[in-house]
Length: 605
Image (cartoon, rainbow, N blue to C red):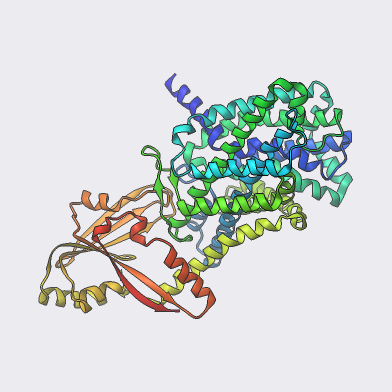
């Protein structure tokens, strides 16, 4: 009984953590599609069939079945797919190709993360216009209300959301039940919409409209936003609760979309805020509670996206594709509950800029989807490569077909570029430039600061250790690994003649797996010289000092290398700026400040 209760509670929790984005899509999807087509019976049945089968193919097949079949110790996401691939690939060109796909995927995910809160919050707040007396409310007040909600959402991130997060699942459960009930009531007035469950109506719509149907597909794409979250958030709850949760909410989403289609058939003059108009027409006294519920649902959807953003940024930092930033841990129980101040406020600024630029959810819907389709396509390509390498032929064939489906959605999304979809590129370009600059800069820096091999280092070390007076205590020296001694270490020991009784070379190796921490303590590489290796998964929160103390190592001082990058070239100036504004390695791992000594090396690039 206990296991069943726990399983049920995890399913309910998944509704709040995972399904917020896709669960709020019914607020704006039908309205966005009606911008492109007339509400005839054939058109409505065609678009409803496209929505239903997009949910089945993209969400159920691609993400709930295939993507979640793949994982590393329960973790999911683009970076996990990269880890699974690079562990099997031998060809350096193939590894480079996968790395490029990963970088683009992360950048697009960030672009999606900016637009999702903006369109979700604005679409819900716009429902105020259906409250009696507010029909002619100035659009500026709607926008101002949305901005206030967004600001409050980001402002409270630092305080942690675990105190109210317990309510997210139940609120979303009520939301999905409301979608289902209102959908059923509306379907009763036009039951012919149930015919849209047949894929023949989707196929017929595409064949009849030809190239013009691409415009409709670019709007249908909105119904599958949030699909990547199912896979990316797998580590929070595990595969089983998320898949079962999807099976629970899928009927609710289908009923809501079919209900809205039925409502439009009965009220063809309605082409915006279809869901809100439908609910208002069904039960006007309950409209305000429903509106408040929808605002809560969009806030929860935005919260899930922000948490996902923190998670993927942390993965990027640990896999060394994103500069390190200061991280706060907001929950003593959950290691996944993190807060990144710089990301939070940059994301808020970007969301506010997008809101001010587009002003309405209708305008945003015209720009939304390009980043989503790009991420979907990249995931499908990487899944196909994994299944092919594993010789899982059937899954590889299905994944190949999904590449075609996702690519069609991606091509349709390109048609939105004149209507503002270029903002997805502009937003994604910022993290893309940062990532590329950081990776190239790190590679160039490592080439210029050639480490000394242990074999070269040891003779000089032994000579100095025997002749110099030694300082009492233990010193830690951070280096990439014990066989490659960072250039600052010989400077400290041999040039500055600072040698302690015990000198420990500390290295951290991040693996392609999300979890697991191992340590290896190699004593007596030479008299007073030891090596301590920490091997950790990229989702682990590594307590370096705790691991050292567990081995009986009590440090007196901690040395680490810092680089001051100087250049006349813009690209390297940008890299130098990133180095200056991001916290040093030791601050990222929260080492004791009173023991830290940074050794600066000036590098001209």
